[in-house]
Amino acid sequence: MMPLVLVVFSCLLFALSKQGYVLEILLERETWVKQVAGSYSIINMGEENVKQPLLERKKYYENCPGCKVDQAKELSEGQGVPFRNLFIIWMLVLYTALPIASLFPFLYFMVRDFNIAETEADISYYAGYVGSAFMLGRCLTSVLWGMVADRYGRKPVIVIGVVVIVIFNTLFGFSTSFWMAVITRFCLGSLNGMLGPVKAYATEIFREEHHAIGLSTVSAAWGTGLIIGPALGGYLAQPVEKYPNVFPKDSFWDKFPYCLPNLIISALAFIVIICCFWIPETLHNHSSSSESIDDVEAIENGNSGADKEMIIQKKENLLLNWPLMSSIIIYCAFSLHDIAYQEVFSLWAVSPRKLGGLSFSTNDVGNVLSITGVALIIYQLLVYPSVERACGPVGIGRITGMLSIPLLQSYPFIALLSGVAVYVVVVIASILKNILSTTIITGLFLLQNRAVEQHQRGAANGIAMTAMSLFKAIGPAAGGAVLTWSQKRMDASFLPGTHMVFFVLNIVEVVGILMMFKPFFAEKKKTPSDQLH
Image 1 (spheres, helix red, strand yellow):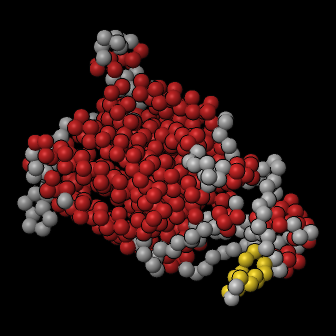
Image 2 (cartoon, one colour):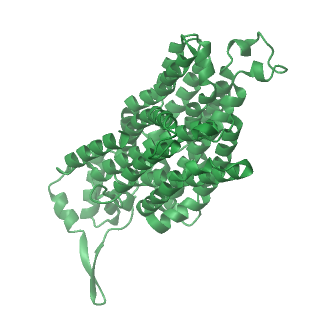
Image 3 (cartoon, helix red, strand yellow):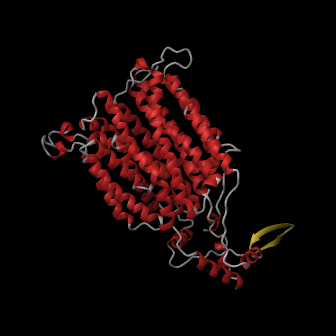
């Protein structure tokens, strides 16, 4: 059912987009077109004629923060990777991911203590609402926050997002009722819109040759948060029961047994708020009227500084930008696959052997995910940038997607192993699967940012976040339901037991891979602003 819905949705948008792009170009002077057309000449080089712009010197505006960043990037040519900026991106994304993942180890017990469930079987039902409240909130407001980032800058949205984490993540830890937990999680998702702008920021703060490592840092930090978060939640929740010598009974920590991990995350996020005041803004804020006057005067005077501003910002309908929309739809397909895989993997690993599982304990699963996270960080920071430069985001995405299919279908056979062998093999399989998935997602980040001009990247990432959040809200429930159904048909003649759930996951993967080929997928190599800034 999931692949069918995805295919229908994709075909509909594909058909709509092919009706054409809506471009509204505003010109200050009628003679501008003639001036621009005349600014290029044919230069004879030997026996070949090569078309080359005569105007090449870049132009910067004195009070524009975006121009200051561009000028700093130009001056830093040949100085290597700016690790300070990498650290900023890392911390922002990490503290966005931690509140999302930290609650899952204790959510079941938290809902149980609310005494809202009539039976023990109903606890998971109510826990699902708490877990999905965050994604629902993010789905509703991601586009709005992207538009705010394009209008007022990336930095204000980032600062507001971290402040929201401090406030509502703390309140969630002090929840005393089911509805308080749902509302605080919803507010945490809807009022924190910084993940989309951070992805745009990760490309704008770096020189072009460092875009890949910037976005791979986003993915690596996100993966790290999804590993550290559950560890914090698992080890620090209910401290009175786990560490009675440090946290006495009938104390503050006994009254609020789930606040400690949230307080730790919020305290660290508060430090990030302070650091945010020193991060540079990357959005250009010089007015179009001043650009027009300067450009015409520069052309009339023969000043080469106008070349940078020759291309006027276009008010383009993002929904009709097919290079953008095709990459977002593909992103949704792989996001659905990845979130469903994460849900299925954890449940499959702890399932008993008689149901095709590995009979792992929660500690075993945590160890596997921790090792996977370390390997993923190393790959993202040291290997992925070189791979992306060699193959490109599209080529490497297709290759890794195809490699993922046989790997995933081999998972049921891992359950036939025993002892140390099963542990070693599942660690290797988990590392490979997450590396392949992250390679695809990071490449799609690059494609989305290349598909639009800088002044629309916040909104574009907002659309991507909205669509992705919707699919990620579906994935866990769908993955768990398919796994349950698979384990009820252990004696089936066709794809018995867990073979079926991994087969269904592969169908979603295949749909995503097929969409990465023409005519569905369209790639925009560079935007004009990328070429000129």
